[in-house]
Amino acid sequence: MESVERDSNITYTIRFRDEACSKAEPGQFVMIWVPSENECPMSLSEIGALAAITVRPVGRGTEKLCKKKAGETIWVRGPYGRGFATKGYSNLLVGGGTGIAPLMPLAEKLVESGRRVTLILAGQTADTIPLLPRARRLEKQGVELIYVTEDGSLGFKGVATDPLSNILKESRFDQIYTCGPEEMIKKIYYIAKANKIPIQASLERYIKCSISLCGSCAIGRYLVCRDGPVFDEKQLKDFESIWGKPALKPGLIKGFPTELPFRKIHKGA
Image (cartoon, rainbow, N blue to C red; front, side, top):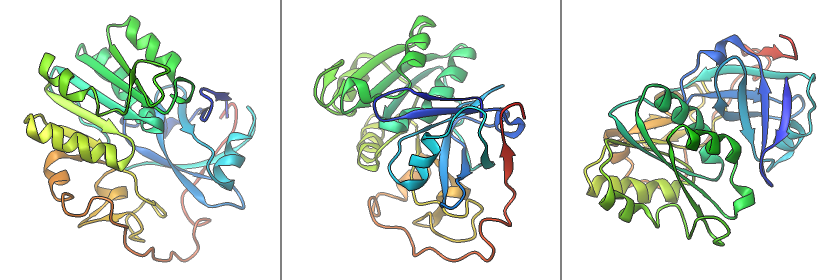
């Protein structure tokens, strides 16, 4: 690993060098194995010569991961899944909490290709929004940033979807991209549908194998690890009757995870 940086009061960004991750698409994910703990699926929050994941420590595995230091080793496999497809000229990105992480490399890719980007960053408080310094660098490149916090400490007071209707009245967008809590995505899907704007959403489910074997990440007739994590509006339409319902019971994988193709990542690799 190259660095471990605390980028908000609740998240850490871990940077590492890995050739496969340097060629990933925004929205794809990797599996990070912490020895003696389970694997953790993580979206890539940075793609390039250095790759990164942005982690909120919420259990033993992620807590151990965030306590690692530069120069220590992590195990990575992937990237997996379907990322965001860049379409249209004018793009609205809506991220809630750690859902901001996979949207950041997407915003950078859209800006590099000359597209117009409006980015909504939402969190409970100003100091819990991850990756703010990178967002502010994007602002200098022409990205319109809109902040939304539940306590009103930065930008609009409320949740990510509160300013959305007014924003859509003032500007026309060719595509909406979103990642965050499922309830937020559900509301944004219906707003996009009412305004006839194509949408791509990155969904979160419990991903165990990541290679479509165990069924842990099933949502309707889809597997998030294989068919997502990014879904378009046609696929999201299939979820209208099952939003919030639990996934199928996880299966078992013989030999998991030591027989899977991990790459050992250490500083200077």
